[in-house]
Image (cartoon, rainbow, N blue to C red; front, side, top):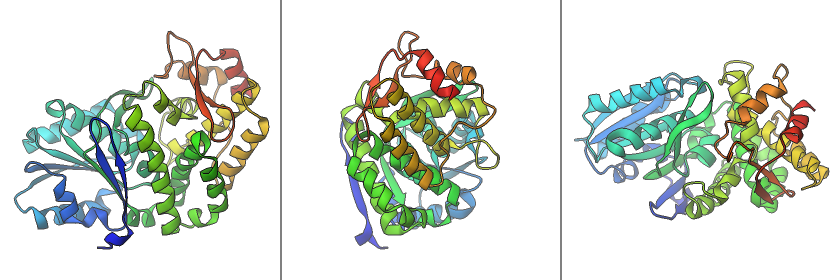
Length: 369
């Protein structure tokens, strides 16, 4: 084990936990076993990730705790699997394991696995431990941190879920070596978000280090993950249930979720945008809307689009999506109040804010243009 390379970020609040970032973490049996209070473990993964890593995680746990009863639950890979039906399958797996209240769910995968397995952990016996083992860059910097768990329904993303902070997050940077380039770029969209909402210096660093990050340089990626997690940890510690500041983490997400829902989810195996790509487009739309409303300059919107474009991310709405249909999807967003659009916009790079009662005509104009 190369523990000297491990970085740690502490998340405080009512349910504190630690994010560990570094190589070799998912095979560190002692580190994994520290998080298991009882004797039951459900290892949740998907059909892409499980064949690569699940056996190694199981063996590492058994090497330290041979008495553990470890069940496995494997989702079909893809956003389209983040459904109530598959959530029910995860609950059935916990029941078949005989999981008691001191059981632990290990979520080994990307955001889909983390969200669904975390939601199952939140609901089984009204809440059991969940350890997030994110395998994608996007999950390492976003979905695994903060305790937001959910599944999708046809009307929209993440509309059914619960806040359930993890017991720990272990971000194993070695796993990024097998990440497809498109998945890496999708994660870099969420990394760029942190620069856009609150850290202009990080935004500039991301521009300067784009070649290293796109090449999968381990040191650059570890730095990007750690800085992103530090930002998210600071925010979720102050606002664990998204009553205020935490909403800033959704820059671009209202637009992006509308695109995903209108396309029918999915993205890696078809022409639809994946989550990170949709968020990239959404951030550009939010920046353009901010400029149209006089909150920020068009130059800052252009700088954001240029950074995302340099990472090979889309910056325009895909063809064939009706602006009116996207606006209808946006009306279902969880941030809205009393039927009025409430969006995360900005006053320039590093200065995001929540804007209530946004004029729908202005939003429609951005969607059309």
